[in-house]
Length: 525
Image 1 (tube, rainbow, N blue to C red):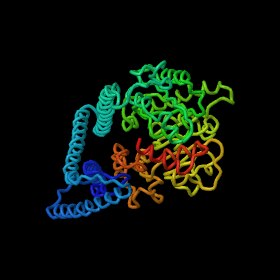
Image 2 (image 1 turned 90 degrees about the vertical axis):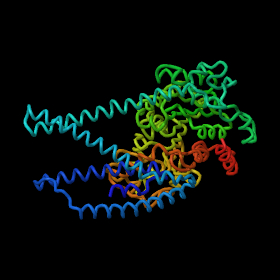
Image 3 (image 1 turned 135 degrees about the vertical axis):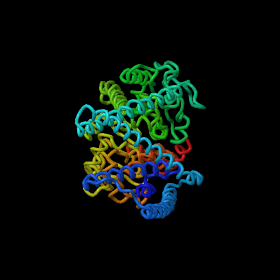
Image 4 (image 1 turned 90 degrees about the horizontal axis):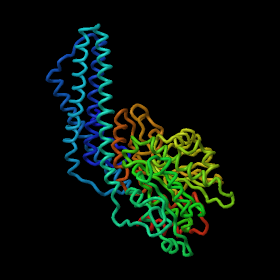
């Protein structure tokens, strides 16, 4: 039955190989739970295992074949509907054909692993049984086997994987993306007079300072004189510690005149140091180029790995960078300070939040904040979402009548609550109903979340249900593919940044036609 339930829909379209993976894992979990239940039943009944007859096997095989065929067909139909909701056209039928092979391989590997652990337990318990009591030997045998398994998984497998990934991506960090060149402007880190060497910026840092709209691009959009935006950055090679990288980035920002601009944006990057160009470009266009942006790198790992293992680094980067900026900003005369803005996507939003204690701190120390795709474990995101006003759904909550903090699935179609004042600092969260980064949580294993209990968002099937264990693995399998869907779905927020920043900044002289034009510019960027 667990195999059949693995075909139920989750947040994103699943290719055949991913479905095979989820299928195999679900089958192994179902098998394990069945074995456990049978063992408990025999213990209470005080009898040994019975050998099933031929008729029982025949009923099992026929029933399983019928159920798998039905659910396999339903699964393909559900995936067709999800692809239609998101406008996904890529679909490889051969991977679907291969999914049973993948499922069998995964199930077999997990079954062999489980039996190996059981054999280790029995051997350990047998050795202990010669020296201590039988019950104590069994209990201690389980404890030792569980402890050893935990150490192998977390110490050898996980740490080994992270170490190899870190080594591989550190080599990639020395590369420069195609088409990116060292800046000739003193307004960019790595350029003439910069305190941060070009070679120390890392791959994503070089992409950040070596790209973006020019003064001419912005002037063409605004149809009036513009400024060349300032971008400051420090990579892992720029300084040894997060605090020292934040310090040199802020020093380079100050050298370039960043504190003399009208808008100063502090960005916490994703794991590899990536800054979403759609976010910063949108801000620079809407501000007429009268802006400065600063960011630092804290890891070599890509976002989906950093999401799981680099949370402490993201926390330190967000806090240290904002504190370094705020230290300089707060000492300026009140009348000459730039508007202090904060942004972050995915793990960057987690790091960006850590500089603040809550709603009032965000209101008092910033002029605006835009977070996109916040992970479910974000402290402030959870605080605001869990404390949402009665009647507002988790997929688009309303907090304190939207007086400071608001949430939206699509800022172009509205930011609830409509008709309520939104004065002073505006804090906006962009979050798609289909974004697994937002909704993944270990609590999915045994707990039904509100976002599944409530009516689904616009790009999530009504047929999605919560199933213990299965839903957790389905959403987990969605994580690596969260950006493999069109913008406006999953973990892709490119299309929403224009309207998001327009809502936060409230720039004057920007017409609906201008916003349409800018969306096109950002989409083509």
